[in-house]
Image 1 (cartoon, helix red, strand yellow):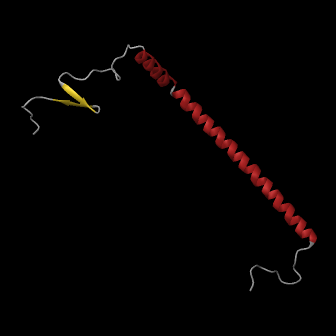
Image 2: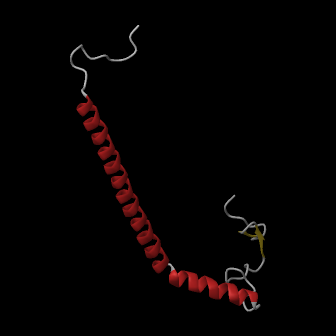
Length: 107
């Protein structure tokens, strides 16, 4: 049984050919590692730029949220979203159900 390729007789690589092959493999391995480091650096820089952009664009929103939380903790804002429930209605899981009496026109 043959498991691998065996070159024809007389074409086996010499010692110099083997040394050159090992050296070429080492150079390719080093080049691949350098290429991966460069790609990683570009990806890291792009991620930092995206994070910085989002941080800069959301600074006003974060300031407003911080002020709202401080106002609620000090007791100034009794309603969580700045509005009271409508008169005569009930709030069930955030939905407003308004009772209009017996004259429901949508039935």
